[in-house]
Image 1 (cartoon, helix red, strand yellow):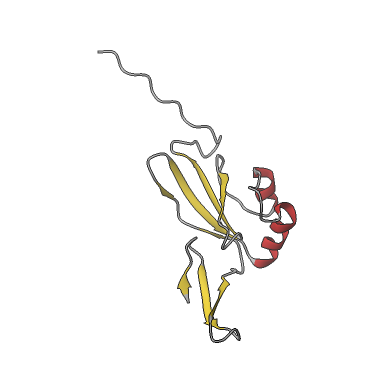
Image 2 (cartoon, helix red, strand yellow):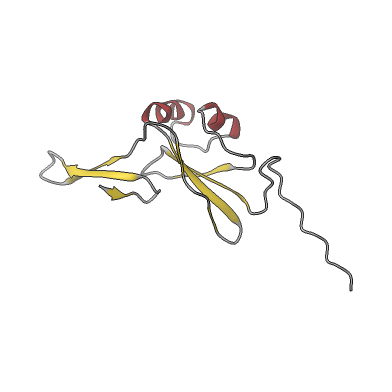
Length: 120
């Protein structure tokens, strides 16, 4: 058992392929949401899909394009406004990577405008 690069757990075992390790992705029973994390520009989170929902996602995108908001919400992913699916993690495409600009209002999805400078 190990930590996947996308935050998912990987099951590692011996395969029948000349004793080489076989890495199998972790599929949760229910949609799993990471804690939020951030850099200087964005806040991020990842969402891990169960196998059945991942199959539905593959039907929509073939794992080759980003999902629009109505598509990922249609799969049952629920989160506040402003999140965008921004990257496909090729080794584990059932892990959806989301980001939104820092300062995004979670009710409207709009980025708060910077306050004008105060005159001295």
